[in-house]
Image: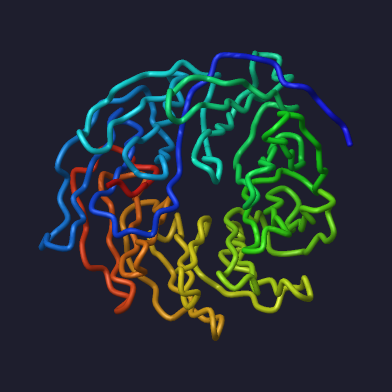
Length: 369
């Protein structure tokens, strides 16, 4: 195991939420407006409405929430900062300087720390890519863990919070960070690791190998690759069913989704969807998977029992992030090259609303209080 000790650098913050409580608001960063829209999605509303726009830094691309949803952290990619929002008062309460291009983030299972990956190296030589660690209560940087390379794309934690797994896109590997010692281990995959998902039991991590047309399977006990499964061209999004029996991987250059049986570690179905399918979300009851088709301006609804598309739903221009409500009633779709968010009614598989005036180029979604 190759160990690299941590080095301290300035940093910042982002968050995720795990609460199953019914959300009353939706927060949407808009990249070209440099604002975050707050949308009222409470059940007493006839239509969903933007109630305010909160100014943030330049080119906000990611959002994460504290576990209680009372604080939001916005990744301001072009100003190398994190904007901290009071999600109740709808105000910007702090700006945290960070490394060069903040991106995805994840909060530890105990809620105490936020880990943020970056899409650029610490300097122009691109020798190290930082992971900033933030105390979620104080908004202070605890440390920065440098990873090899210059572009990381995704991060998740094991259920016990002991290890963070990072998709190190530029190095063709997945790096693990010991959250106690901040030491790292490099796990080589086939190329351009892009997105990750973890089994419900926490015993396996699945990796979309965007540059190798495969999915790598990592045993979390040994931190070694135990299988490499061929899929379609340029796999990107990846998700696992709540029972852990199947993994769905989007093949963005084929317009298909590969379904992997987690017992045999083989592809058991290939489902045609739409042009440039990228993200996939599986409902909490495991009955449906949703895939956004970026160049078709549609979302495909997949029946997980039959592995067939049950509906193709029109949305806005270049749909990107998709997010299902905790009660499996609504799917929210941010349309990344216009100014809208589409709302899909999950039980009826129909478009129920289009929320206007969200801001220019909405790119991410998170539920607020």
